[in-house]
Length: 527
Image (cartoon, rainbow, N blue to C red):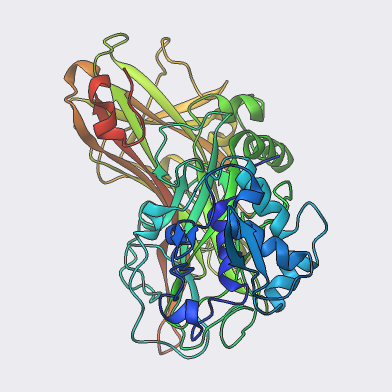
């Protein structure tokens, strides 16, 4: 059974059990007892009576657990509870909606006090996402009417679209992988099947009305969800992640309830990402989609190279529909996407040289209904792919592999510019059993294909590089962007067809020496 999250499973519930909504003593100013629920780290530290968690991993030795357990046992507010020779007051003072939802209604062992006790027994691991909280922008001052939720797609995002959101939004969104053992953000160069992470995102409300059932005053329920997709440019098969707000840590419920989000304020939401579980789900989703993998079975293609995943986070009020998985921040600000991964090269390894790495990905229609409107204009719904490459030409060359059958079906010579077809090297381990390989030869490049409709197109980005010519440090980026043709209507009700960016991904290339790995990765030291 996965461990409870301190920050998302427990702390966020402690905040709304009688204490923290704006205007109350814990929500407006430091409390007289020095136990401050406004910030997560002080909430597990000292108070005027002593350490609220106690010195052991025994729940009964924790004053905070003891006072909540006393209330759960039916004792009245402020009834003395003696822990370690010190009397503590039974809390909370009143039994409101939050206590009913998190303690009275759930069945054991999924009551809040039970789960809190289990967290203590398992070592009191603090997974507060410190780095992510540091990215939360200041409150928004110029507000819109009502509740206006959004997922942060750039640093300082205030919910205005397009605002400062760049075309490669997938590289800038405030969506992060977090180590559940430390609460620190991590940027693994690949995801191992044994990996476990928290997926954490920053969300906001640029409206002048607070939202959430535990907001003061109470508002409509606010929900968030997270989906993980096959590494892609626009859309691909997907699986939903379980919410870290679930008291039952075995639950697959993917809806994270945002308890309260004030006017012009931000919150963070979290989800459980167990890599093997996600991969198993994606293998099933790929199989069901029927996508052409050039003769490879889904599990081989998905695991064939260092695996990467695309994450999308959605938010809504309960009275609203969910954004579509294929939406972008420009078509719906209640969705954010992260497709950014580092690729690190050890400069001390000299053989083979040159070497090649493939990164498998998929493409799908984001604006799917355009495929059905092509009868009005045959260009509508068509997709363009462009590659932006900043790697030095003397260090690396960029390749694109497509299953041979898909290439024959979707690609046309007149729709390919800035690439040349090459024969694969006998030394390469290709990403498909039968495939066509294109080499990028110009910055002015484009590949144009028809609308895919309900289908997906599997491809693979290849980088052939020479270690001998690398120098330690940042080498450059390769970005693959997908755009779709849509009608743009002017004030005279006339239209022109234009291409809008609907997705993509960015690979950051880094050359490192193992002795300096910590400096460049920020995640671990390798000797």
